[in-house]
Every structure is written in structure tokens, then in C-alpha cells.
Length: 394
Image 1 (cartoon, rainbow, N blue to C red):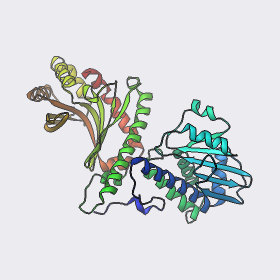
Image 2 (image 1 turned 135 degrees about the vertical axis):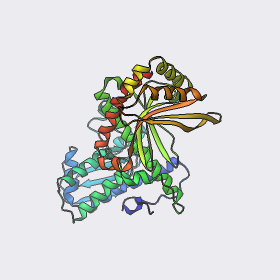
Image 3 (image 1 turned 90 degrees about the horizontal axis):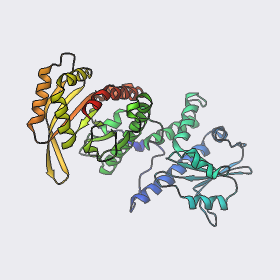
């Protein structure tokens, strides 16, 4: 099996040697800026004009000059677009924090507009501090402009502009800097190891998927908070990444995840699952007591979770603060689930010193891929369905 390589995109670059993460981010920021300038410089001149118009800058597209790493006595913006008498300086950020001193130096030592482009979206209150001096954008807004131009078929398919725009959109998607638009086969395949894969490239692929999971959960969290008051103020947690899977969680209070019932999302090479998870000793002990003392109510709620998997795992310690687990019982919930099943669940949960409980809906990767953006809505619906069980077991 040959995995799809990100290096087929003309804007994705081979990362050079870097001493630390700061250097890696700096290389990436420089490359993103260069890619944006390359896009506008080699595309139809009206693409730049229409983009700038969309953010309130009116220019004549004739006689435009582009420059990278502009050196001024006291500041060094990442790029410059000069259209006749209009100077537009660009400061680009990826993971780097906002630098107020740097931005103020740009303001003091340049004449014209300053575009401050970042991965992060800044609040309106923050932007007001630099009103009339700086235009704040995030990379997803630039990608969104290009996507709309593509969807309007502004530039015919067999043109340089269309090609470069598509490549830049794909590049933004590579960096998870466009709105979540669904999972694809490549995302799942990042957890399939091959003997001949480049370890650095494979690790970068899985990191990309981890960032995409955070994006997916962020958008899911925003939707569920609007749909169900119970989730108001819930918190997002992204777990550790390994070679076989990535996971994230939505929790309901501060404090360690292990000490509370939570929603977990787990993705591996073949499937994505979403549901309730309880793994700490205190919350699992509490859950067992609640189920034992309210078996009929538990069964009533459980039977509403059709096609959910009820999984019990024996949880054991490997070393200090490091645990593993094995599946010891599993049932698929349906309308025929009975009190005998509940008794079996209780028996298995009491059989082991530490248990991990998960009630989850498992989606085959092909179903996840086929649903595209609609999969967020289906996951949000699953969160609404398990809401009653969460409140019961808390």
C-alpha cells in the first residue's frame, strides 16, 4: 500500500534541519507567506484585487510589485504588496504567539496597511486596540475566500489561477487552516504503519490528524452547546498521540479527566467511535453503585442507545501513572436488551479491581468518509442521545 504523500502539493516544502520547534514554526511561517505571495503574483491580477476588496482595500491591479522579508530599520515584515501608491505589509503567524512589540514596530516604521495573518482568530475587542492601523485575518478566512471563488467558477478549470488556488486551498487543509470539511481515507491511513515509510513524515501525518481531530471536536462542541443546555460550558481535551490511534474528549468540569465521566472520541485506522467513558476508580465505583441500586431505570435509559456498544475493560497498572486495559465484556445494545444483560454488566464490573466503562457508537471509516461534513451533525446527535445516561451515572 502506497500512502498519499503531502509533497505532491506544490506549496508543501521539505522541512530542513531545525534545532527546535520554534525554528520549525518559523520555517513554516516563512513558507506560508511565500506561498501566499506566489499565489497572487502568478495568478490572474483580479484575484488579488478581489481579495483585497473583500477586506476593505481598493487597488488598481496594474503595476503590482511583490517582495518577501522586507527590511526596514526598526522592523521586518514578512512580505510587501505594493500597488501603485498603496503599500500592504504582511506579518504572518502560524503557532507563534502574538507579539505586540513587533507589531508596534511595524506600525511605527511603515506607511500603509498592515495585514496581520494568523492561525488564531482574534476577538473583536482585541482588534479595536489597533483599529485603522492593522487588519487582522486568520488563514481560514483567506482559504474561505478562495473556496468561494472556486465554487463560483470565477476562473475556468484549465487556468493557472484555478490550479494555484486549488493547490493553496489543499495546502491550507494540510495545515488544518480551513474549516473542517470532513474526514478522508488519508486521515485513517495515517495510523497504518508500513516498513518503508519515512518516520518523520509518518509522525507529521499523525500530528496533522490530531490537529484535525481538535478542529472536529471544537466545531462539534460549539454545535452541541447550542443544541443542548446540559453541555453549556463543557471543556475540550485532546489526548496523547501514538502510532495506532488518536483521541479527544469533552468533559464537564475542571480537574483530571480520569476522575469524571466524559465524552470520548477515538480514531484509528479502521473506525471512529464516540460515546461515554468512565475509567477512574472513584467514578467507576460510583457508576456500579448507581446501576445496582437503579437497575430498571438503567435498563430503560440503556435501551434508548440502540446500536451503541457497551464495553467493559479490566484496567491494570503497568508502572506509576501508566495503565493498560483488556476488553472483558461487550454487548451491542438493542431493543431486546434485558435485565439479564444488566445483571451480566454488574457482575463483570464487580469482578475486577479497576474497570473502564465505555458506551459508544462505532462508525466504520467508510461511513465516516461518505458523510463528509454531515458526520459532525451525526456525532452531535450521538452526544445528545447519551446525555440522559451521563446525568444518570454522574
